[in-house]
Image (cartoon, rainbow, N blue to C red; front, side):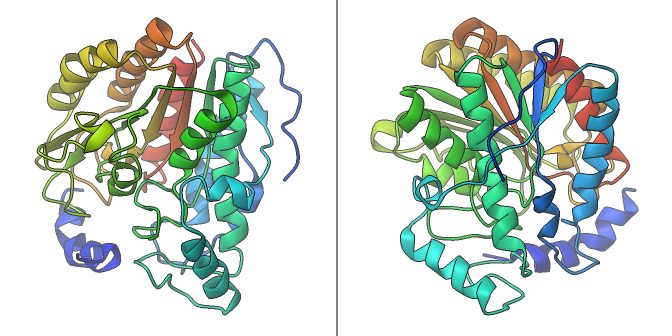
Length: 341
């Protein structure tokens, strides 16, 4: 499989031409809670790397503005414990991550994920952010939550980090919902421009998760064909929707309405989660989809409608990709505006 770093370097010319503690008390007036911890900025790839701490700074600039307007509340999550991580990842892989970061390695040996001395702290915080958001939603403190996290997670499988990802944040949150809150059916909708191969692998034969993914194809990581449908108890619960470069509102909003909605009506999820990758926005340097900020608002409406119909409105959204420092905060603002409506 082509490394993500190598793939991005190969594709760059064409792309350019296209131009820790318990959660804080939260105000009851806000309808969406944003979970964030600044230790996630301690994951520091090289300065020219697209997955930089400035991404989260840009997102939180928008979040703080909306917070001042009283449209949301910001809460501090707890870091994930090793038990949380082991809900998804093998003990051998977790030991490898710890050892390689402690040894000062600059790249994770399992895949193209850059490392720094603060990467483990940041990765545990990212996974713990989703766990904290799930707790808040399932305990009724909020109905909707957004997890402002990095490093992202949807490329990480049980025993392999890759594609900028260390731990699979949304998968850890989903498994926590199963263990702690006895949730039997969870929907994960992934609108990142890259296929969520790690999430697909984790839940391939699980049976408790409906995984719905749109992605550019052919594109990194090269997985996500429509005939990849799951196996065993998970057979038919993996739903892949690949589209060529240039796809946008018509194709993507179309399958959310025409494919995801009826699939969710059959599955009847008790918790809805989003792998919210905003590199599917027009102009992102790492993707060639053409979604607009308004499109993200309408995608949010579709998924929120599913949550209200089947899950009592319970929805947890988790940041994945999005690498335009100008476009990312605008897309997040559009998403949060609908989550808080």
